[in-house]
Image (cartoon, rainbow, N blue to C red; front, side):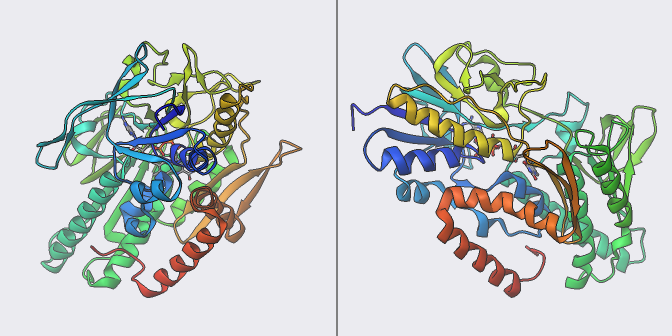
Length: 436
Ligand SMILES: Cc1cc2nc3c(=O)[nH]c(=O)nc-3n(C[C@H](O)[C@H](O)[C@H](O)COP(=O)(O)OP(=O)(O)OC[C@H]3O[C@@H](n4cnc5c(N)ncnc54)[C@H](O)[C@@H]3O)c2cc1C
């Protein structure tokens, strides 16, 4: 064990967990390398589910994977901890002291030696320094934040239901800043919650008492996606009585309102920031590795960092060039999934002295899910390169398949089939919304 090549993957998210699973199954199991995963949390939930956890239409605990249990099954080691430094000369990563919920130190700062290091620590919301955003916005970067959002939302509904019962004004204003896929999908989820909660006992409140606004600085929602998709999504949001405000940058967030660039003030008791992402700030000063303005580590097409061939990075935290494009690979689960696959081959090749695999992103299209209402999207033709517009049940099927592919990568086909069946049973047994 001592002399085995040690591959350390930091970040067990959409990409990192898939990578350690394949490496563990292939190399760890046969004692060809020692595989370790380091993550700041004890469990994994696929990040694109977080807005459903926040609204309550998904119970996270049923979709949570415990790293320790998963590691045991897939022949890798798990280390709980938050990486905050790197000593490239000693080939060691530095893990911050681990504190309990009361702030008491459980484990002091420690170092983990590596032969090959892979950084896959994802991204966090980018508030672009907007005054008040950190103090008054909710974010959806982690399971903890999604759960906090859910609790705050239930309390806000409870308060408004009570006020309605007392004959007081009781409109609940919710604003989502940023109309990318996350903001748009969250709006639809919240509209569903506003329709369901009165059914479960908050019957003084009506869905129309919950005002949901999606606010976008660009001149259309889903600015990164084709115009047709954006038009279809706008129609769908308006059908669900979600206000769509475009071309309206937010210049300040206050406790119960938003100040727009033109000076107008909009009431907002719950404000969610979903505009833009950046990689975790600690990467910007990590052992002299090269980063861009969003703190993303610069990597070559083989996902090697530009200044150290023993360190790789991928997923949201890496800026990977694309041939024939000025833009790096987009920060999406789809990209992290494909990169995990390419990097798995590269790391296996490395042990055998073979060449790394060049990563080419294959955009399969984009799908926007409007909770249980509908799904719209475009699928890319592999050969023609043209996109095909789809909506409704077919689109929903493709949308769900992205998560199922992630589950297959983590559990294999058989277990994914069983999980799918259990999901169906669970949905039939439980309320349509998580109520606690
Ligand atoms: C609400 C929401 C909806 C989305 N919907 C879609 C979608 O429909 N389709 C799509 O393609 N993409 C979607 N995305 C984007 C997608 O989730 C990300 O692109 C994807 O998760 C990136 O994968 P990753 O492995 O790079 O990082 P992540 O999945 O974010 O994982 C990062 C991991 O690193 C760990 N970590 C972070 N910092 C440290 C540290 N210092 N030390 C140790 N561990 C650390 C974290 O705990 C986490 O486990 C959505 C994102 C959000 C927030």
